[in-house]
Length: 159
Image (tube, rainbow, N blue to C red; front, side, top):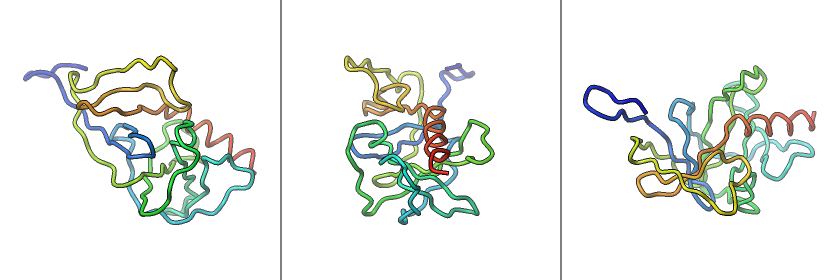
């Protein structure tokens, strides 16, 4: 983290509440948050791929992060939201991915001293790049490239 003229620079992150914890993503990847609606199922999809939602002309794939990571068998869809993330992999057929949220995502400011890596003796769950503490709150930093790849593979297999 680079230091500015007045000290350490802060960056903005967004905490996405999921079953069993929180996922921390850069605020620059957030496109929008929408109310969950039942998506159209995807044939032969893994249980973590809930289906596709119509959003701004796209068939937005929606995933249950906790299920993909093996942290829960299923996530409740009652009173949930979908955080729409910009895909960074350059796949023109997959410009966005929806992540099921158990409540409202929350903006958080992060400086070098507020983000502390945690080592997990059992290793990291699938789709997780790092386990951290943000303002003493545990969170997972997702491997966004891995998530995009897994969603892309699941959609290709269903086509």
